[in-house]
Amino acid sequence: MTTPLPNPPASQDALSFVLVSLMKGVVSRDESPGTWQALLQSSARVRDQLGVLGLQLVLDEAEGHAFLRQRAPVDGAPELPRLVARRQLGFGVSLLLALLRKKLAEADASGEGGRLVLRRAELRELVQLFQPEVTNEARWMDRVEADIEKAVTLGFLRPVGEGADAFEVRRILKAFVDAQWLGEFEQRLARYRAHLTQTSGGEQ
Image 1: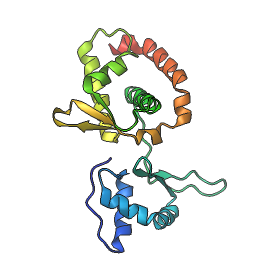
Image 2: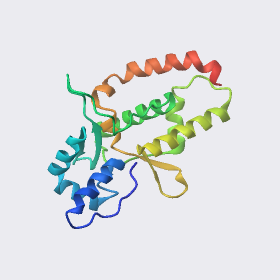
Image 3: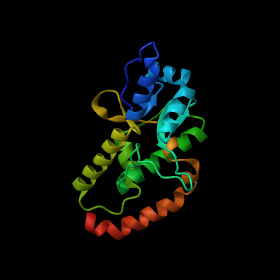
Image 4: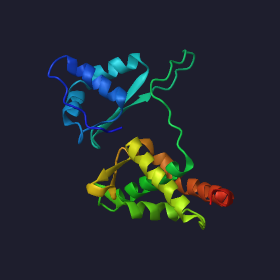
């Protein structure tokens, strides 16, 4: 999702390069500075081109990332085929992302801000707080590891250093889990706990 991109050509082809890069996923200032700069220089044209396709450019200069969203259908107008796929996330991944989003908010509120890095063991402990008593530890560990890898694939976690034992929580998560969603977090966690209590017998 955030694989570094090569620098765009210094010509009119730069617009095409930026559009293709956005169609493939997130453009990050830190990972693809050349593409990011070309995007800033041509953002108005990019928005015009994307609008024809029913897409919206989400550009956050402060956080340094950009991605595409499907525009909401207009009343009475025929709905265009989706070019940006919806991702159905499993319960474990959803829980992990919600907890990571809360961690980001806490870091921002404390004034730490910047880069939030958590070790693999900390990610497990984070999720374990919301797990019922587990009898099959190996199976639970496998499931949490799969959720962590899924979060990496989606671009919300980035391995840091060698050994993949630490992960940066990418700030783009804030764009996908917004303030309103976070405000309902406690209610969501209550539903998560209820869900886990109901299903724990069959999943252990």
